[in-house]
Length: 369
Image (cartoon, rainbow, N blue to C red; front, side, top):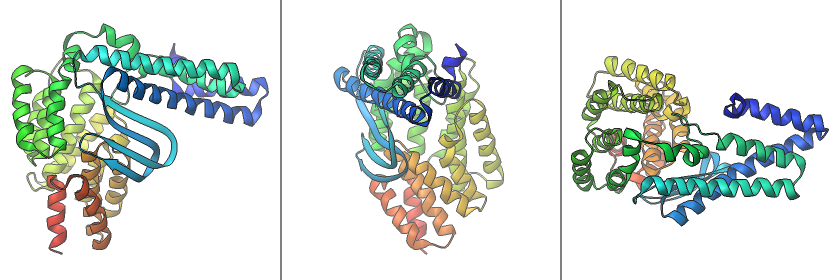
């Protein structure tokens, strides 16, 4: 069982099997190709399930690394990155019954992936078939953490979900209305939708997340921090919940210090501790690159802030996240004395979400220089 939960160990096993059979380097490369093919099959299956079961696509990202081209709307982002070796599809349910639609989408994804494995064994080289099979086994093992949720979790674990976690999912259409209004820059509509969510589901973490989103979008970082702080002490949280809360706390604290709402001597170490806590609860460090970039800038390390900001922007899956990270990059370039490059970066941030407080604030600082 441990083998199926461990990607690195499973990869080693695949290499050993291929080499023992005598396929050599060609077989190992075929196994790598099979793995990538199977990952793509899961994502294509997810996209098919989204279309069949009427979910909403949030993003489709081809590849990893530096973004080369993107097409964005407030609701959808399609991006092409420098290394087009994988594809990522994100979706959310905006209609009830939420859990049934998510389960059917996960099942569709799994069936497409199984079909690819069957085809690989029938017509593909041995290495490709072994790599695809190993990937299928790994992805169908149910696991859910701050870092990832496997397709197998949706197929095998989601139907048994109950209690608060089930209620969180069932409330997602209402919370999506808040998020949609924020992404469109309509904060009045977002506030009205949030009031409805708070009245209907005052105790859900999704409600907390929606409150933080609205406060942050309005530049009310201290209020966002207060909301998160009130939720951290709950005793019904899993590590993945705590990781997300600590990440939100770190971001709100860093933004409050940046905006002068908290003394940097207080805000920077507090945000750094929250980052460490989020990582301790299982959130990958790269998912915190945007906050780390802000902290580097607050410490006076403009070069590191620019590097981390670009990393965060290229890893962003939605428009607001990329715009916010680009604002950090522009501020770092300004701090390094390169106002021309800062204007170029800020122009993209403005085209994505020119109303964001950090984008507006960056533009104001840049225009007086």
